[in-house]
Image 1 (cartoon, rainbow, N blue to C red):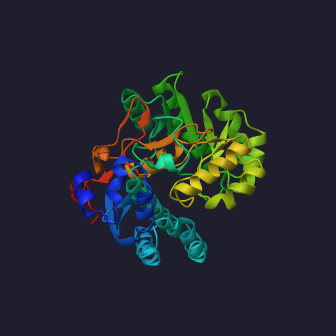
Image 2: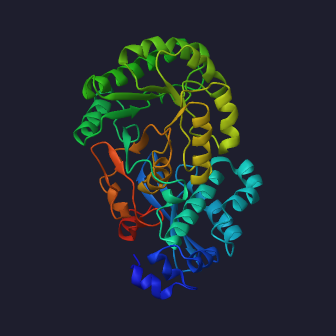
Image 3: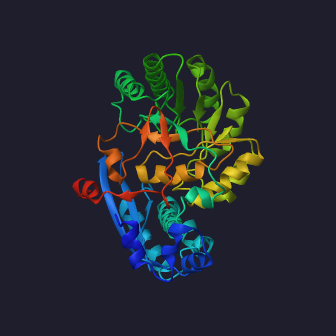
Length: 397
């Protein structure tokens, strides 16, 4: 990682003045920084998916980091990353809205892979901007309302999928200090729901998994269930009373989007969703239809940090809480946390627990998550750098 003195020696046009305040020379120099070459890193995690990371260079010698994981296919996300980086190359690092407008046709065509690639470059840009101005990114988004935030342990990607397996991972999360745990207990529900006996079998298995986790974490901690849109409205309505005794913090995405308002109207607990939506434009009808009580934009899928802030503002106007989705690497969590720190209606942030023992060491300084809270970095930019030794050691083959 470059020291401030080393960076000051290399910084053009008076950028080093950022260390002593935002002078006119500093801001003018920052505005002249342009995007440079892109590096990508694919880190192997498990069968549920790798972590795809981007590092963008700049004309000032500063680099920014971002995440494009879980877009669907890593090779496609990487192709979009390099394609979009060529569009941004030579442009001002402040050209975030410009880039989004330029890439609209590609996002519409490429779906989540393209959205994640755009978001990663956008995160990189904010990281560089913050470093150039010697400010944490949250200062550029309205200032921090909190210096740490509550996180919940998503154990769905790490647990063995029997009731006992889920319970064991939940117990580990509790021992690590988490007071909220989430799982998706019906992931093996068939897409064809015509076989009533099979549907009921998986329904019961999922409830058994959730019940085991509730027993493991006790009655005072929060339990969150994600249905991953596996149900139609008829079966979703039947699910609600069957999980009500579990005293859920929320029930997430029971059906595909059109059916969610009916689920919410019948709710006996808060509902949450919206993780796969791109942009504030998609969230507006989602909100006005009364789809959920808690919005879950993902910093990767939604279009980046600025779009995450926009979605949060829509939610605030509608009286809704915001809890960003993000079961990925520390990089995405760090980017989301910078925005969440500024949200008046923030509720809780997702944290992928138990996937790999070296998670915290993927970044420098290591991720600071303990006692169920994630610390928000006060360092310039996102406040993190990639630990290249860890990334190289676990590089996807």
